[in-house]
Image (cartoon, rainbow, N blue to C red):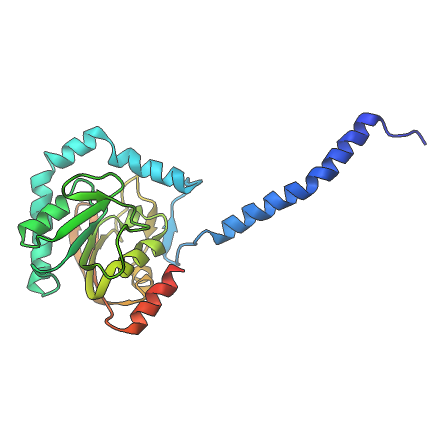
Length: 250
């Protein structure tokens, strides 16, 4: 039998030596995939996000768009502040929001919602967004809010559809709400959100299930700039609620 050519020997040896490294990288990639939070049933994550950085950059493409920011601050400003003020007054009439509430608007962009809160008398209010807009909006990622536990009496958001990890979005709201605090969300159920949305909510049920430490106060149809449903939660005022929220954040 003729001996194997030297080059073939080197190739086989190289393959043999690199096999453990290949298996290690494969195992690491598999473990990372398995650790990635999966959306609850009834929520569909849109494709195309190969990494969290890819997702953040796509959101920044909208938030940093100079033309959009100019429109939000001028042509859209008064119209949206008036509509948001109407929503907040309705919550005040139901005693779910008061002038003494410490309030947060999640995903507030240039702060139209914050301005509306201040106009109806909720002066202690602030917004968070990936891009700050002083003095109404500070920098923050709604998947990891830059606030301590039980900070706010009231939280509002109309950007749930922009959450890549819906469970984390909800968990951070419950973490930063005080016991007995209220969260009001505007979501799209019957309509398709905009092209920058990261998820599609197929019904209200999965959202209710994610608020493990809260109870539904009411749900109603609204016309909220492309969003059609308002759902209001109240965080449970018990130790069980705290345990439920902590479990959801793991």
